Image 1 (cartoon, rainbow, N blue to C red):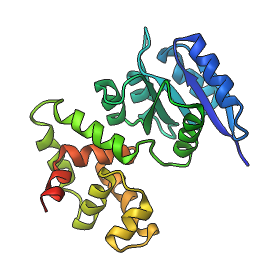
Image 2 (image 1 turned 90 degrees about the vertical axis):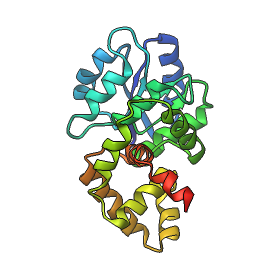
Image 3 (image 1 turned 90 degrees about the horizontal axis):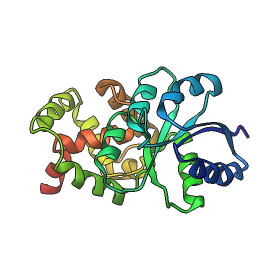
Image 4 (image 1 turned 180 degrees about the vertical axis):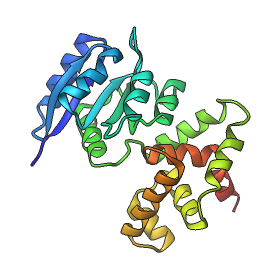
Length: 224
């Protein structure tokens, strides 16, 4: 079994040491590097080629948000999981919008952080339906008034079936649940998700969820 290559980014050396000890004990995870600031991340990624980056948001020189945005703009970018102290924080939302695959709280039990790294490495976002709803509620009070208009313009390129899948993704449903609810195979769901990502120029399912919320698609479904 090929180990998941993991890069740790946090300005607190004690936090990095704790994460390294905890995550390095997993048989399928290899710590390939550590960084104390976002400014070091791109060079370390080039050198170590991680599959996943565990990224602190608040750092003194280059913060995790900026570092995440730079990474996710690259070809063959590693997945990013944000480390934070708050469930619903504007910085977390911004990190998700620029391509982070999810987030974990710094006081999350070790087994759950390990599970999050494994999930992201496998291509699944680290957002439960409950957390997704909490973030969506927080997002409702943020951003300019034109966000919904812009989101609706972007969503307009999707066909009806793709819109249904986007709404299901926005609700935090897994592929198997979407397949059951929309009477299609899991393979077909995956194909629709891939097409949605390509059409909307998005990085991952989390961004689909946020865009569906911004466009008001989840509210429309609740009304029906």
